[in-house]
Length: 456
Image (cartoon, rainbow, N blue to C red; front, side):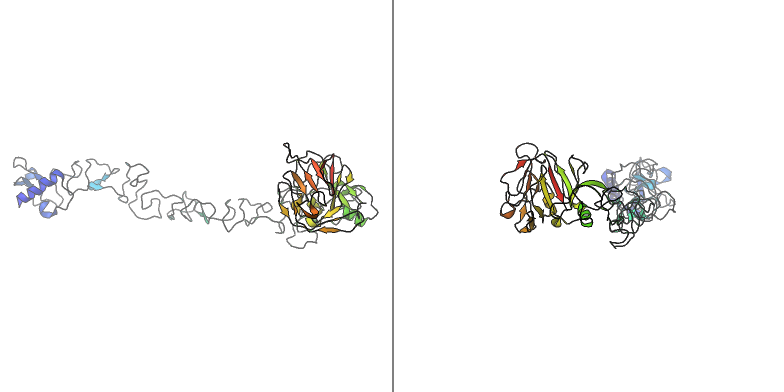
């Protein structure tokens, strides 16, 4: 038996795998040196026999911490440190042993930033030996409100538009817009700005008067009565409804438009008048030229254009300048409050009218940068003293160098027929500037000193 045991020990001393030696084999823990054993042990066939009165873990001369790993030891690094891979008792370090391992880089799987010897994921140290943090997906419950790190929720992400933000439940007023719940969140208690205190976006008709915008700017409210009645004191655009019946003779006797003045005062003559086209809304009162004699009268001079003037969206945008002067200017045609296809207008070149009174053009007709786009509409025109004639042909922009166009490639709206086209420079660099105009009935376009558009 001892020869077999000797063979086993020698094999283990060379490079034996870790194994359970059992009670019998662990009795021999040291080779005899000259048949002498320490601690009064007996030497039996080259091995020291453990004393009978020794405790079960007695190991003479071969001890945990001597730096010599024995088959029954998971490890033995010969030091007393509990911060490396081998801790007290010659046990391999592991997460949860209560010892903070400090010899691994942070990106290693065995790295520990804490070790509280438990598997509780609701305290300061998670079961994977990482320190608890907001966003780790584990709800921490070991702190009180006001403590650093206190959590009421932890959804495991850092997304700031869901129900849990910085480990606190999302609420209106936290400065983060919660998806599907809030329209806005400006983190203030101001009830009269662009974001209401219930995190709904301010809108005309919500019953809350905004105070954060100046007159004429988007979102400005002169009133807000919270209803959808268009004809009461507060209109549905949150401006006071003003019913003009003045003759337009001064800034204190405003008219709404030249058409309104002519309708209210039929004997009004051509000349300058004071109007407020949007009834005190975005555009302040102004002085304009009114044509009270063409057709039934009531045309407002909306545009005064000169050559090489950069193009713009004539339907919804304006230009700098004063409408009562002779410098270029433009009021948005939509300001008259008439649908695009209902708008009546004519064009004068160098002070002489060169088109009949026309109507039936979509707003697209007045917008640049839509080369070759067609738009639907029944263009109609009326010669002086004549009846309205309707052209059902589709209308289109026919040149890459245009601003406004009421022409199509064929039919009654073709260039030289009853259509009209404003051209840019086809050969130079001014492709976005007005250069020539082709009026109905003209075979070719021609230059101009001024081009005016009158509308009602």
